[in-house]
Amino acid sequence: MNKTGIVIILLCFLAVAAVVLWERRKARKTMEEIEKMLDAAMTGSFSETNFDESRQSALETKFAHYLSAAEASSRNVAQEKDKIKTLITDISHQTKTPIANLLLYSELLMEETLPASAKANVEALYKQSEKLRFLIDSLVKLSRLENGIISLSPQQAALQPLLESVVEQYTAKASEKGLSLQMQDTDAFAVFDFKWTAEALANIVDNAIKYTEHGTITLSAVSYEMFARIDISDTGSGIPESEQAKIFARFYRSNSVQKQEGVGIGLYLARQIISGEGGYIKVASVPGKGSTFSIFLPK
Image (cartoon, rainbow, N blue to C red; front, side, top):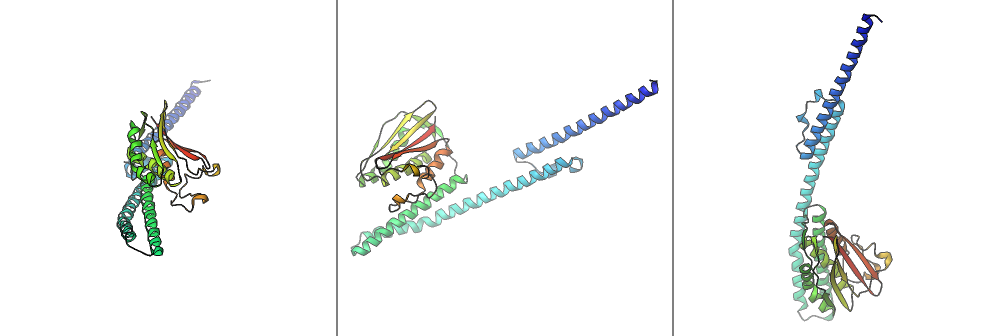
């Protein structure tokens, strides 16, 4: 092979090498631009005007359009959450006074000397007003949790004060029905939000009182290596096995308890609170012998 041929081969090789290097440099630049876009998107500072599209590949352009759309969608979601927050606040504020007045006037009427039929109607009015108050309060709390308006703040703490606060709140209600509400002392601790975990426990205890005609309701806690368990046990009517997976659904009520007060949202709210803390709830029940609701909280 003569020198001319060798020179041509070398020139071709150099040209190919130059093209390869140029393509690699172009690809690297494209990846760097995409990486910048992702960094900007993660910090919330992305703007398509930050980049010169005339020097970007078609992929970069499409990616920029996608991130712009995602940013707009994120802003829309934030705006919708603000609207929901305002709506929930308005509902809570606007309904509080009328419901309080309904309860007050119903109580005043019950103190009057009324015919038996009128007295029964007033008592029914009071019960329905109380049911409405509970329903609206529960829905407002649930909406705030589900929309992130209220955030849980779990902290490591002892469970004894938590159980004591719930027992203190419901002792009078249990006594009115002839039930005994008891608590076993414990030195267990867990990571939980005191206020909202107390709300979850209160809903379960309230249900236990509601569906127990005689006997005892007991609160206790057991500590394990990785978690703590709170048990709320009653001697009530129990829950059929076929319904145990359904009772935590929103507004679910068994046909066997339709005649009793309740709206079917307490257990659903309790589960939302506990799962938001990294825990979970399970139930064990035997119809006619009672139920035990177990709340598992991380330590």
